[in-house]
Image (cartoon, rainbow, N blue to C red; front, side, top):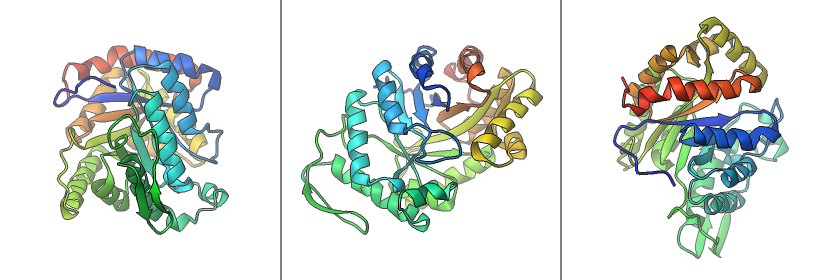
Amino acid sequence: MSATRSPGEVRFGVQLGRGRPDSLRTLAERIEALGFDSIWVGDHVCFHTPTLDSLSVLTYVAAVTRRVRLGPCVYLLALRHPTVAAKTVATLDVLSGGRVVFGVGVGGEFPKEFEACGVPHAERGRRVDEGIAVCRALWGPSPASFDGRFVRFADVALEPKPLQPGGPPIWIGGRSDAALRRAARLGDGWVSYVITPERYRASLDKIRTFAAEAGRSLDAGRGFEPAHLLFSVLDDDWTRAHALAAQALSGQYNQPFDELAKRYCLLGSPAQCVETLARFVEAGVRTFVLAFMAGSERLSGQLERFAAEVLPSFRAGVSS
């Protein structure tokens, strides 16, 4: 478990990429040693590029780390039976010493994986909502009962429980109003991606409004965690950083990413990155998830330089 958090503290995590599996241990250990706060893994069952199972990878990472928090960013809960997902996440929380954050999203950009899992694409939002409720029921007091549209059970005990009382915090991923409403109603946090600081601020305001409509009061940064995933390339030559990001993301998502990279990625020198990050902090971000896109051969250098030349600005409390 991580140490007590000071007010206004900004945290930084790293999303593991799709590099060689034999480098996972070294990479995870180095991320922790450099002072990052969390390690994340993307999630797909079938995708354009080879992708390991997220919770399996995180279980491996849990065994070779001691401090960092761990989570999928984000887990496509609609593709799995939620009772099985609840069991797997509970096991990961126990094995990691209570370090799990359960990032959950609806997905949908690759409809064929829904077809492969026998899940109607149009049902993914409703299945995620119900799946979250199933997880919370099973992580709570035993025995648990549930009567939903997709899942029903009576007097079931899921043991052992997660180490964190009531289960790991659930962060909702997404940018749409439906995702923002889900975060407001059901989430302990929200993680966005591919948006500007201005849209981030407006979206966080929407979440507060939706939460109030649902009878919840969100204490952003304390009881509710605002997070943001940033595709990142650290390089003194901004043009080169942009080219690396656009090439990597175009291949990963099988679509042109040149303009999107210009608008939404974290690019450039350490000073340029600090400036961009500070704008997001001003908009309300308290946790960053960094997905470095410069290629596996450059990743070690990216991590080292970010830790040495960017992190200190925020550890010292510079946030605007």
